[in-house]
Length: 377
Image 1 (cartoon, rainbow, N blue to C red):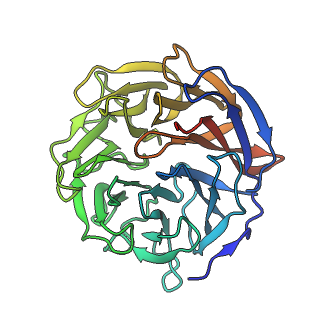
Image 2 (image 1 turned 90 degrees about the vertical axis):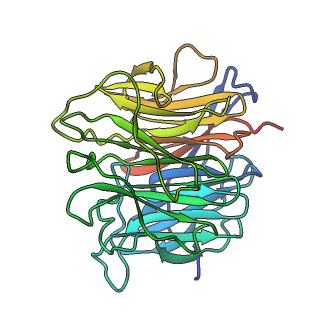
């Protein structure tokens, strides 16, 4: 397919937080952006330290690329123009980078069926310079219409996509795997079906692939009125998943969806943890392990960097964006008026560690990116 550069006049500001690779004291420096009207940014970092920011703008999917660890970006490339692109409330494109491929998925319609929302994929074997697609991920057309999905890439190039699926009229969690960076996908497989009929209807899932063969998927469940986070592990590259395990010790009885799905990441020792919100408080825990309260707020995300785990979340009220870095007892503020923050690093955790979020800029909804820590040499 043909890609176009700079078609969206995006107001992507780049907030460079200069600090050493150990995550010490930082000084924020605002630099001119190159990326206007960007919505729902998502970040991936490849093994060479290149940074990819996927986002939506109106009915188009874009990718902006940085060759210097997130300090500057080339003009964004239009990956595809699609009808009915799902945006907002954690809906929007997702991106993952492996050794050989960059993969983007999005919930959208097609030229043939504009209102039939499916999960579609684009793949780049050229570090984001050229893109191939779209390829349909879910095989039952219209079953991905909730627009909430997640992808992750593993160290060998494997990719897994999970999405909230409505093929039977209730909300299930389905997944599909690709062994070629997203060019082809396996048959849909049921990851989890709630005994109460539906999982939580408006919270996005999360996927993490820490090593070859292992895949973790997290979602907010709905069981007898409780809206807690659950994790399931696969030991066969996502072909099948084991028993679902609840995260944390507390529970949350709620009659509505909180629209907050959390994220998965690896700790410095390689163990997989989930970060999530319960009753407007942010927690961190591995499956079956004690939970750790991080603070008040919501919309959390986490990623492993060169020196440990980096966590971001929003403090309610003014949209205060907080970051908790390794060996810090308390979070620090890096922005205000923010929403839907994410943080990402390379699969091996060497960095750089990049945060991104959406905010208002001069009356326009725009995206912002910051470097939390440099890449480890």
